[in-house]
Amino acid sequence: MFKICIDPGHGSRTNGYIGHPGFCEGAQMFKLAQYQKEELEKYAGVEVILTRKTITDDPSLDARGKMAAGCDLFYSDHSNAADSSGNWSSARGVDIYSSHRKPNADLCARIGAAVSAAMSNSFRGTKYRDYDTGATTTAPQAGALDYYGVIRSAAATSCTTAIIVEHGFHTNQQDVSFLVDDNNLRALAKAEAQAIADYYGLTLADNPAPSGDTYTVQKGDCLSVIGAKLGLDWRDIAAVNGITEPYTIYAGQILQLSGGQPAPAPAPQPTTGYKIGDHVVFSTCYRSSTAPIEEHLTAARMLRNHGVITRIVDGARNPYLLDDNLCWVNDGDIRGYYRG
Ligand SMILES: [Zn+2]
Image 1 (cartoon, rainbow, N blue to C red):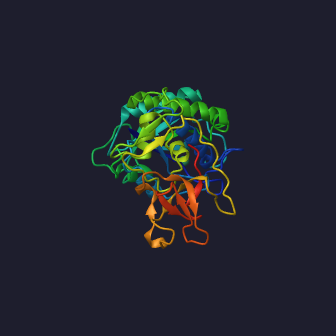
Image 2 (cartoon, rainbow, N blue to C red; image 1 turned 90 degrees about the vertical axis):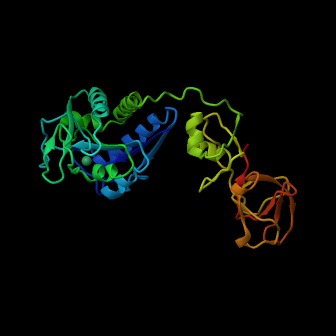
Image 3 (cartoon, rainbow, N blue to C red; image 1 turned 90 degrees about the horizontal axis):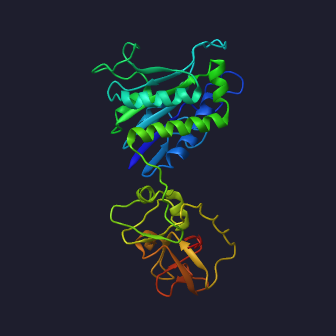
């Protein structure tokens, strides 16, 4: 299992860096991060989290770094600036900042080579910056505190490696013209994922489970672990099995696998209730048709989280009996039709 926290730098157009025409660092890095996630998830046993869920998100540097807890790698996406006056600068190329506290020169060298090759510029080296002096060095200094907030905060968690990748200079005409192109960002993401995979020994998940297969949940499993084991997107597994937040599963539960295909769109919610014979997925249920909400049972504690309506008691609090004796549910508990 390899877990990476990708941090697309800055925020949206309103608070990200807006530089030369058509370029906003916060927006382009957000796009790049989506592509990196997509590329990394092609490898087996990879879990990717992002510090920004939407393009307008702009968490504090400290909050971003803290999200790295439990990750193998914190990867902050940026582009560099050499001139704040709005003029083009001649400086171009890739810089990587590593942590004094948790340096990783080998990984940085691989990523620097991959990014500069994709951007047709040069790798300017792996750097370490000191919080107290502001000085930049090419080797880590024992006991020095990291200058950049995201690295400082991420390195303070259990995360083993925290880096900032400066994808060229947005103040350089050649670098920025590369960065404004979506196809280039895709190619860049692919190259970065490849470099990360090489370093961490990740292999492409080229054997997705065939359609129609099932998986029996083992003790200690969670959906992301199962997805990683099988090379499937855990969200697809959740969708196919009607499992919703907080995505609780239990040992012995049999999950339908979709073979890696996107799950069909959920059926529209009816407005007039369900009928006998409907096969529905539920989130909570009850032991009787009259049980109050406080006595609900979670779907995760049941044999399964879906069933066929076999009886309806009109006007009851929980009017639908599932599978004759599984449990009772009401309209609010039903999450839609089961698509097994
Ligand atoms: Zn930046």
